[in-house]
Image 1 (tube, rainbow, N blue to C red):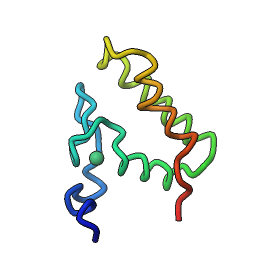
Image 2: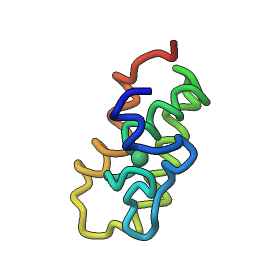
Image 3: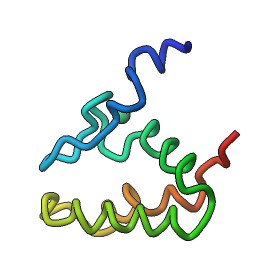
Length: 87
Ligand SMILES: [Zn+2]
């Protein structure tokens, strides 16, 4: 196991702490890299991945009032366009 993964803890811990939307596992803004990887594994490179990412944005937006829309888009949606395929 890589040091990075050890520090991140079990993948199941990478869930959002609301209303801050900070990862419970690694304390990065959610969705953190591990959470993004898990979403790719779950949904693959299908429209469902973008839909789930959009759902998360809809859930988070009221809590993150004041965050610029472009920042919300980049954080919750944009990464799905360049996410690595599951191996
Ligand atoms: Zn995390």
